[in-house]
Each structure stands twice: as C-alpha cells, then as structure tokens.
Length: 99
Image (cartoon, rainbow, N blue to C red; front, side, top):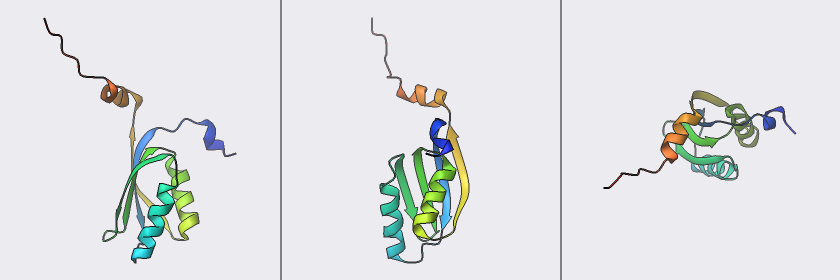
C-alpha cells in the first residue's frame, strides 16, 4: 500500500512527453492509460510526442506507472489542478426562476 493512497487526489490534467516513435508505442500507451481506473480522459499526440491525461489522480504516481510499463522516459511538462470550488460550480444545475 502506497503512502499516496491516503491522500485524496485532486482533479487535474497533466501533459507528459514520451517518445512515441511508432504506432505500436501509441497502442501500448493507450492500453496502459485505459487500464488506469483513476484517469477519466486522455489524448495522445504522436507527432508532438505528448500525452495528456485528466482525472482524479496523483500526477507522480501516473507518470511512474506509465514509465515502468512503457520502459521509456516520461517527462512531466505541465500539471493543472482544479480545486473543489470549481468542480462544485460545474455540477450545479442551471435553474431559472419563472413567475
């Protein structure tokens, strides 16, 4: 059991650079990402060698897991965390008062 499992993960998006030089590498990265339960959405840009993942996770844990399974260097370029107040505003239904 890892130390990070007790810390509640925030919703965030992370941009990583991974050397994806062939279609098989893209398929392998996609398969690994789809098997991670904490990732809600992803985008793989083969030409730019970039992978973007969004969800409720700890960024370091996802990067380490991807590096271990891909056997390639993973470089975290950007992490954007979303606070709980932003999530609550999005989840509120838009209700207009009609007289």
